[in-house]
Length: 165
Image: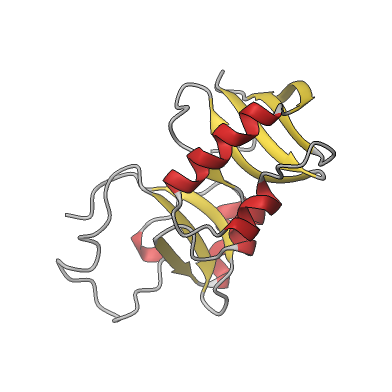
């Protein structure tokens, strides 16, 4: 609910064998990615600056953040290594990376930055009405991006808390 501190546990260069694994995992998770964007996010050259930083969150979770030239592109929660979470920086380069995108008014954004959860009244519904079909495609724990009403570039990422059915 409120912002909490985290601790950095180390900062290291990522080995080329791990880079290859990460590239394959990214391609499998997000098939929309092209080679140009993959090379930006996970460079293959030995001289490229591609690092990982392990963070300890206040919840006790360990998170590994992967960065190129100090720009964090994605992270993995150690208890859930099968899932790659993109950062907002990643979504700015590829705004349609996540298939679920929610839009919200600018007034709601300040509430979200103060720790509020996003709920249905804070969403802009394209058709204007909520029907049984509106959120049928949404499944629990899907990653989604959050955009302001007048901008297609995400301001945040999240995870759905329930099914849309």
